[in-house]
Length: 361
Image (cartoon, rainbow, N blue to C red; front, side, top):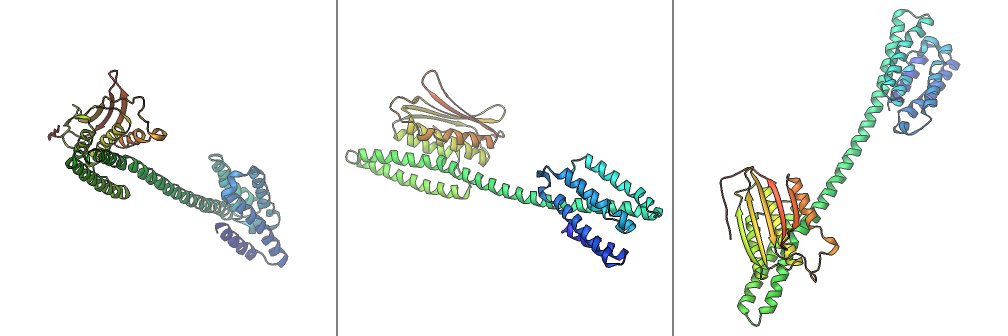
């Protein structure tokens, strides 16, 4: 649009300065050619063509050659060429050439016999025309870049939400479904020998199913409402039902909700993996606050993956998901096997110290 506006203004100004159909036709023809060069140099494709130095040279020749015919009536027309130079030549060389081009208008018009005012007007017109062409073209570039950036941000947001959903689905529902399956197996084995225990296990299965439904709502909304203390109680119950001795020691005070949810997820994932993939008989869950205010959660068990215990299909995403969650809140995760056959999953997260102390066993 800027190129067309510049073309229209140039046609009006040039035609006004001299009468005669042949003169006006020649001027309009040359201006049409210059319009083509301006569009060529102002479009987004200008950076991707190897021929721009030659086209810029042709643009300059066709800009200045008509001075031999149109002399002073050609005032302001070099502004198109000045703008094209700013758009195609790399800075700072482009601005040096632009300055020289603007300054060169004065001697050109002085040679044509114009007075000082007209010479200065020619220089100012060239500078203004070039800056307008350059500014409008760069504005179009920035608009296109902004649209591309918005599209990229939207795509990233969709990707991040997709990753969050899959991560939460794995971390939150995996535990509930694993414990529910375990309790269903216990109920199946005890339904004839101990009906009371079977009923109790089925009741807990119903509670776990309700928890899974609640987790599903959290996943869809992205609003995690988990606490380490509550998850530890559920985990201890599930482990004991599986015949695993559990020792729990929570002495970390209180945590911000987002930190509490992350550590609760770590505890849940650790217990899920223990039930699925280990031969554990003993488990320890400890959460303590360090002298610097950091909270450390360690889940240990004596059931390092043994022969005959199936590994998680595909290698699993649990540890990777937990690592991402902790990094998001400035924490870190380590998983290691001790020399005594114990497996330790440790999560450390910085948190402000509090006076409240909670213990459970």
